[in-house]
Image (cartoon, rainbow, N blue to C red):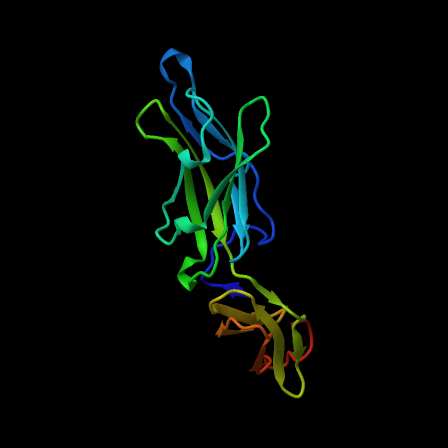
Length: 213
């Protein structure tokens, strides 16, 4: 299956960890303000929460969660998805968690969201910033393994579930190993509680009614 409205990297169920980029500017006297992200990327489906732990230190005391700002280069980003809270700290400085929870979203809102977390006013000594990325993926799963029948006619059947709040463009394809033959169907998978039953018919390649499909 291919989800044409979502850009995904790697496994849809696994978050890519690593340090995100940070930005800081030394204040007079050598004091430093900066933000250190614990992870660079999270992937979620609508209704799930992406958590970005981070540490922040400033030359002007402990930042309040109300002093942080989160923006995205993606115009479909909704600031109402954002929640910031404190977590346990260590010797480095206060720790926080940036939580992003996309709720009911439109089809155009699937995809990647580069995020910029900042504290203070840009261009001044009272500023620190860091970047991370959110990827919103469809919540689609196959209820059963595909059932393929070759004789007396070719047919592929599949049960799918779309747990999102909007329809998703899906493609199902079948290929014959050992030849260049393939067949593809494209359709909209509606958002509904019951599984969606897909059935596609095809004519197997001539002389290739056996083998792996």
